[in-house]
Every structure is written in C-alpha cells, then in structure tokens.
Image (cartoon, rainbow, N blue to C red; front, side, top):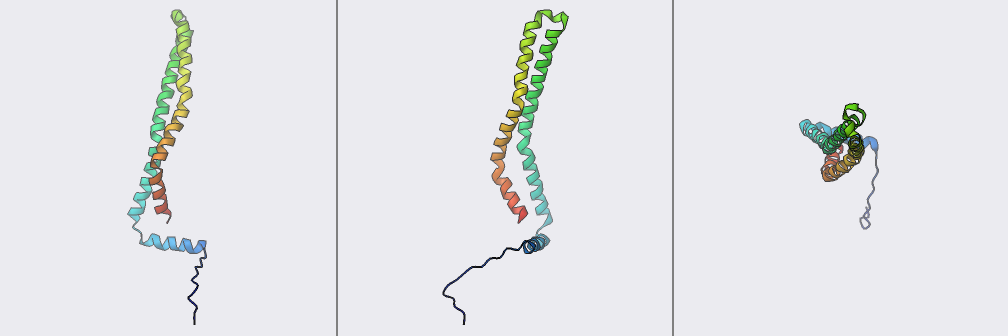
Length: 128
C-alpha cells in the first residue's frame, strides 16, 4: 500500500531526451509556421539596425563632403580667399563623421529595446 500523505516531485533532466522531444515535436509542427516565425525573427533583427545605419551613413557622408569641400577651398590656389573659411568648414566636417558611430549605437539600442519582447517571444517559440 502506497503512502500518499507526503506528495513529492522528482525531476530528472536529460539532454538526449529533450532533443528527442524536439525532434518529435518538429514532425507535428507545421513547417510553414516555423519558417514564417524564423523569417519574422530575421526581419525584426535587420529592422533594429537599419534606422541606425541610415543615420550613421548620412552623417558620415555629410561630414566627408564638408571635410572635402573645406580642404579643397584651403588647398586650391584659385580659392585663396576661402582659405580660412575652408579650414573652418573642413574641421566642422569632422564633427558629423565623429558622431556617426555613437548615433548608430544609440538608435540601434533604442530600436532593440522596442522590439525585444517580440524577439524573445519568437526565439522561445522556435526553441521549444
């Protein structure tokens, strides 16, 4: 006769057993659903970086153009009247170039925080 007065719980983790469960589950899970979730996960991951990339590239190009224009004005003898303004424009062009990466990081971090709940939900569903 069993004693039911003290219920207990026993749990044994087995990695091979968990892998077998995943394989069996994959047989019954609709492949299109899994592929769609993986595609959504990839799309969301890319979308987190894109706004930061656009902003950083725009700042970098603007800074390069300013630097190049300033250096052209400062070094070409025909533009000798623009020597000092050219130096100022060239130095001012360094600022957007220097800010490109920090702007990229800040925007990307904000985007990742915004989509983190959905990313974590999808990864949880795909790894079950």
